[in-house]
Image (tube, rainbow over all chains, first blue to last red; front, side):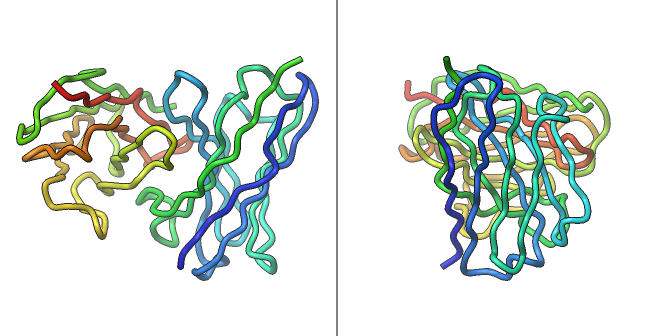
Length: 121
Length: 106
């Protein structure tokens, strides 16, 4: 079945780095754009980043631009989120999600279970 | 960036009620999606492109609107519908979400 599984979350000190992974299965990963979305404690959903099906185009939320990098390895059906210079406000559950269609515009239809990132000294 | 607002921020309703949630964008958009979020679970896509029902979503959910004003309607509210609902624009990056509307049991 179609599935996304995130990994790599944990507790990290402010200013340090963390790399999240999202392993995809059950669909042709290389033909879909992919997203990262996060949910901070007591807050609402926040879109974080988007990568095109081929990895050529990447877009970021203003809150993470310059600190986070999205990437993908289509040969391994895996997407990544490299998070540098982490701040307390980056504490959240991070979800990876698949675009409904090959483009960007029609929302995200498949989500992982989420991985928790806690930034604390 | 496009800002999204939702109203109300929360509401209390009974099983069988008809519920309407409004989402407004700070500028005209063409692509608007609705998600349901329950605690401890991943978000679930309900409606895409303002009014298209996602596969597998019950027909009591419907979406409408265009330009800057959009609506999610849940007719005949069921016990499993108590959750938080988010709109999201995917017209222009960054793809912003609304702040959410929590639907609680009256």
